[in-house]
Image 1 (cartoon, rainbow, N blue to C red):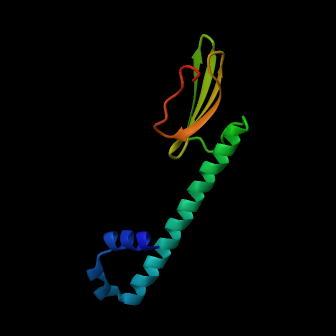
Image 2: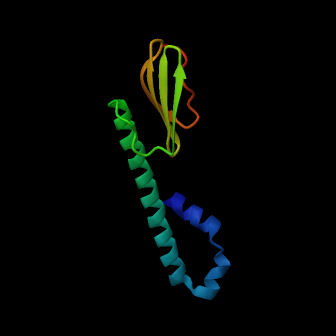
Image 3: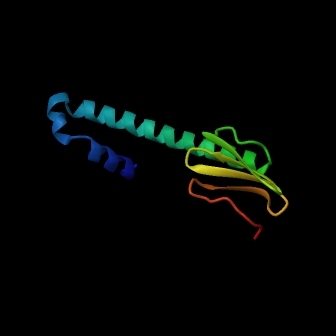
Length: 111
């Protein structure tokens, strides 16, 4: 909660309390904290759902961008989500699935 208070103090001009009062400022801070927590929990839920679906061999639900790359020995399905990438390898040289942050690169050979 301290982190949220610091963020709110950074973006909220404290001189504004003279106009609207301290009570209104606390109400706005609390609403902002609740919204940030709800957004964070929602994002974590989306990441977990897509992670477990990808590891089960299913297609992720929350893809912003879907891409299929074709190679001579098969293809790679790439799903880019909100801060992550999911890969499904259907190649002779590389098989399986992978999940990682948005900057994760595609595997080109099995390791």
